[in-house]
Length: 319
Image (tube, rainbow, N blue to C red):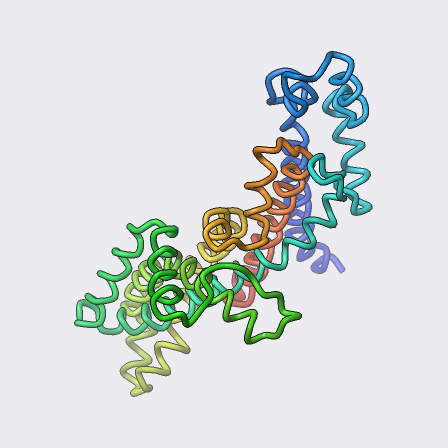
């Protein structure tokens, strides 16, 4: 019984830490209105509003209350799924986010998977033949893509794959309900643009870690035993070399989820990025707050998933 309690302490501490982070992030999101010059009503309604209209607006949306009271009220509603009402469209924020989230989530997941599918085999093969022809070519490509902004890559891909060849649509989106093939046809170019922006960091990080692991004694022992090179790389080298990659991939997931504004604007995609781009000029505070909270909570959950993944990659971390 005591051993069970001891093992459960790290899990409870981790859960408490994640809960504290979520509370701090949501509190900071609620405090966004306090950073505005003047009252939120005066900023949102503009200089043409009267003092009475501003006071009525602040009272109707609870902006006349202290920060802590607003936060407690918002948190209580959020726990029931109510994130407020959009000032711009008068729709429930949670409903709009759920409509837009699948597009951004699909882009993020597919871009992350594609970048890993490019980076992992290339890094392992290049590291096993360090300073060879393939290694030099891939290192040059990684450095090149690392220095090119993602919107430039997107423009080039649109010209090559959409305008010149007409293989893929220039812009727009097809939901999964329109068919998987049509959905992937619209998603391919923006996903490829995002993936080419992420794979260089994955490639360079994993290549360095694999080279380091190849110098370990247990790898030399496996080589002396006559085990196949491919088996050694996949069974003995890749897993211990993946810790840094998993951490960076988790950070990249959050970055892709929050930073898809440029690509979604370039390809006219109805995701969270384009929603944020529409909400900021409109001063739609509840919508902006909902987007910030959604991205932050997703980021926290991804980091928790990474911690769990570590325990499978290396059982020693369970202690």
